[in-house]
Structure formats: C-alpha cells, structure tokens
Length: 61
Image 1: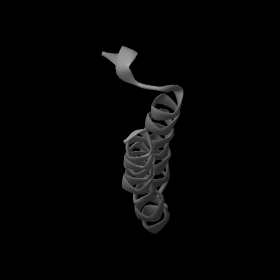
Image 2 (image 1 turned 180 degrees about the vertical axis):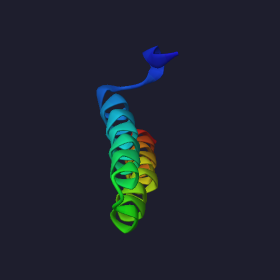
Image 3 (image 1 turned 45 degrees about the vertical axis):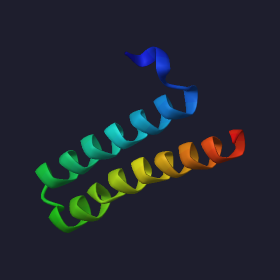
C-alpha cells in the first residue's frame, strides 16, 4: 500500500500524525485551547500535500 507514496508523501503523513499526537498530549495536560490550535495544523499539512501533488501532476501534462 505504501509503495505508491513518495518520500514527501510519507513525511507529510508522519508530520500530520505527530501533530495529532502532540495535540492530544496538550489536551490531556489541560492546555485545551492550545491543543485545538495545534490540532488544526493536521488538515493544513495534508492540504499542502494535496497541493504539492496537484502541482506535480500539472507539470507532467
């Protein structure tokens, strides 16, 4: 399954996963507003990955 992913895809996926884990840790430690702020980074990281894929695909055409 992961054979189709490039190194960039894997790094962005790992980064978004780590952001979610960090957000959970902040939430459990009582920093709820900070946890929500950090948790919003994950969709942004994934959206940036989609943007990079779209740019890469448009250059191939």
